[in-house]
Amino acid sequence: VWEAAMFAAHKGLDNLVAIVDNNGLQIDGPITEVCSPEPITDKFAAFGWHVITADAHDLDSLDAAFTEAEAVTGKPVVIVQKSVKGKGVSFMENQVGWHGTAPNKEQYDQAMSELNAQLKELEG
Image (cartoon, one colour):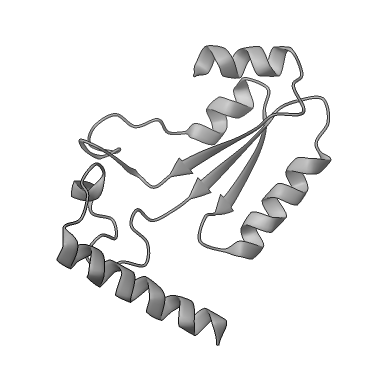
């Protein structure tokens, strides 16, 4: 990844937008306990990328990030999105065990019920 990041900046690939999902977890546990990639934003900036941060769960934040990205010229853009793993499903939120695990039928039904309830609230 880092060689590609350096290459993209070196070539001024301003038609490239990378998205990093930063939920603080990896398959073996919290990144702070396993192998932290932080500070992600500083690393991309050091390679010459235009760095934008956004809240992955806020549509206005995402819209602003992509609008800003469209205006950047001369360098690639990375949007580092802060997110909550399993957002919206009570028993999955911030649970590292769901990193590579599929829900069983009962869990799936519960998850879909919770997500559909939230969707109805949004649709008002």
